[in-house]
Amino acid sequence: MNIYLPQAENEQKITRRLIAAIPPEQADYTPHPTSMTAWKLAKHIASSDVFFLNAIASGAFNPADGAIPDSVTTPEQLMEWYDVNFAAAVAKIRALPAEQLVQEIDFHGVFKNPAIVYASFSCSHLIHHRGQLSAYLRPMGAKVPRMYGGSADEPIEIPARA
Image (tube, rainbow, N blue to C red):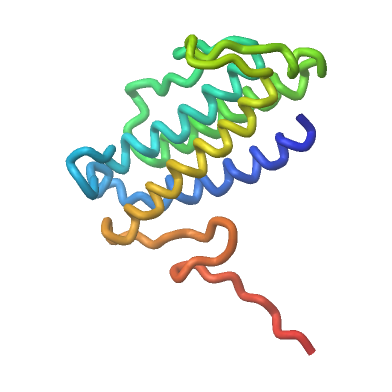
């Protein structure tokens, strides 16, 4: 897990930048009637990240392990909830014995995998939905933050070579 956790922590920073970019007055934006709203998508991203990490830590999937309280109603509150719950889940994983990471976990009867496999699955799931949310931002009138490099709205300055 020492390989995965630094990646998860970096991905969480990227997720926070996307959530922070959501204009609160545009949280109900959706590009299509069958798409999630920006707010629902942001909550899904944060809750799923915590949900998968808690499953790895506990050895079981429990829907309550990623539940966001109804009192969380703004991007700022969501980031606060995400910070606290993400950090707690990561701490639990860091304390795990290595043998627990290879124990199988049943994902609601759909498939069974060693706990460590869900770390990769979670990351792919996170990136997929963040891509959706990032595509919402400009039509919402927001700026797209940098993720794996600069964006048109937040470029990375690369020093000139001598």
